[in-house]
Length: 228
Image (cartoon, rainbow, N blue to C red; front, top):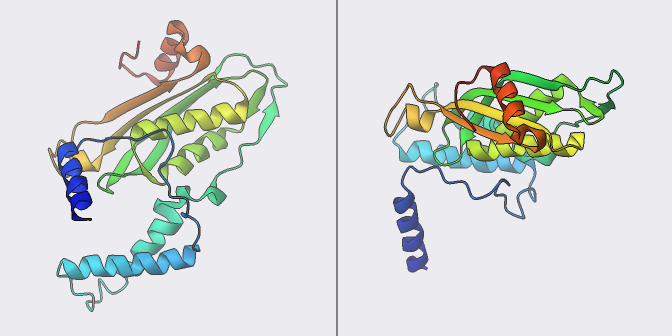
């Protein structure tokens, strides 16, 4: 048992602050939803209380008394609510009756997520586009699907891919693209403490792999980064 723990520690030390993503799927255990949200609230509240007590905080202080409960509610109901499939937005599509055949771009979608390596915020903007093959989707649904996948422990690469894959499935086309530009507080507020840097990730599907169409999309969102 101790060898396994030591091996895990050595692996963690070896990776250091590197942001390693395992796959395009969020790593969830098979029993992730075997207990209710209320049970999760109670367990998280107890864990946060233990963390703060270990750090030496006085939880009898009026300012701190409710902190474990507040953190638990925020984790289950807000910050990590995208882990629960029941919160996935319904991506209803409609016939493209007006025969719009050009690119549709929804840009500057607010991204609030959480880095799964340090549980610190990721804050930025997502730019999403698709070319209809006969179906269209409500504009607000594009924002909602970004928010759904953002509200979980994440790596930005995975988030970008999940947004594209969800919209491809809903629209029945590969012609979907997403670019995310975000700041990671695990970089900005700790470690190297580089407050100016941001991370840009992209996923281009179908026609968006074409050089000219890709350039048109990037021109729409005015990204200077060369993805070619």
